[in-house]
Amino acid sequence: MNLEHLRHFLEVTEDMNISSAAKRVRLTQPALSRQMAVFENDTGWKLFNRGPKSIRLTRDGEIVKRLGADLIRSVDHTLARMRQEIDGDEIRVGYAPSLGGDLLKDTMSRFAQLHPAARITLADCTSEEMIAGVADGRYDLMIGVSNDEPAVDWETLREEHFVLAVSADHALARKRAIKPEHLDGERMLLLSRSDYPGYWREVTDYFRSHSINAKIAGEFDGIGSMRLGLEAGIGVALVAARARLGNQVKLKKLSPCPEPICVAAGVKADTVPSPVLRAFIDELKMVAGA
Image (cartoon, rainbow, N blue to C red; front, side, top):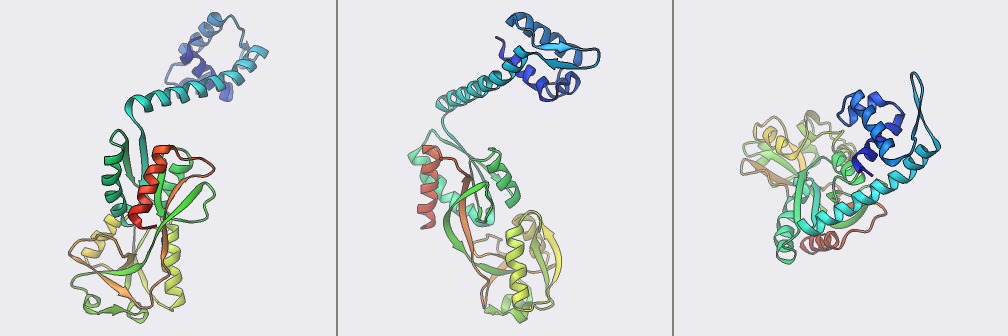
């Protein structure tokens, strides 16, 4: 049996439409129709009842659809294991640089000495991108703020405190500690509400609980773009205390401090991490002091 033909047959059975299936597998409609005829001829099974404007699966076709999908999953799983054993394990990590950058740097250094064959790929992501990536299998691990997302199981790494980030020449840069009243009327820079809902909630709760009437001067898709706004002096921002923003930005303590956030390692819910992924998480926890 030609496995490519089986894969294309399964595509056709998705919506029983040759035209749409042909687009998905990057063939012309006549080419895919001929391929299905060859597939039937090679197997000796009549898979389709063909009408003038539609096709339906025969009993044989229904069986091939059901068991063929199982076969393809098994083949793909075996191929993945072959690649893993030949090329070495790969750990795909989505992370927020302001929260997990320093953890990953030290962890990768230690991990590489113990598991030299393993490959680590990193993706700088928003919270929403990380959660979606772990849920659909694009990432094996995420490092971010733990939440009640059901698609992710969390392991706590450490607590992270917020501080105020200001440009070096800002008036607040000269204060020893920042009180809520100092922020009243200030122009605030925030990470995007849609990409970082947990961050947005923590910051706005702090403003609300201390009656801070701040003005939102901009939203940013990451800590790198926020740094540009801080250096330009267009506003101030609440960031993680370990954020690395360069010499042109000063980090000032807040008194009282906002509630700390929980930085955690997240994996797909209801799955058991592979041995190499488990070892990487354990190294993360050791570096974090968890």
